[in-house]
Image 1: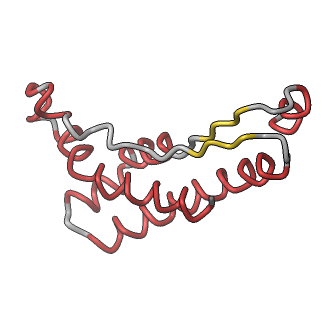
Image 2: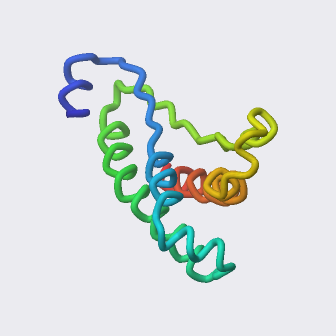
Length: 121
């Protein structure tokens, strides 16, 4: 689909941002929550690494197609930590374990995602 769009729109600006939904889905996995709340760092790290690998497998083909078009201008976006102000902006979430999980794990997830994107780029 990207190749078709690039052919139809030469000199396009292509922005690519993927992966955040993969990490948000990880936060909802029972095994991940169990490992995190159980302080099983090796399982948490393995699941983060596996998710980063999935992101790369989705990201690299898109980037390859975009970079193959000499007329496309490619803008690669990193991600931000969407939970940085989660608890301060909405203190009612402070008692919710899922929000605590998201707040605690977002910095390493964001770092893993941005490292994956940078390596692919």
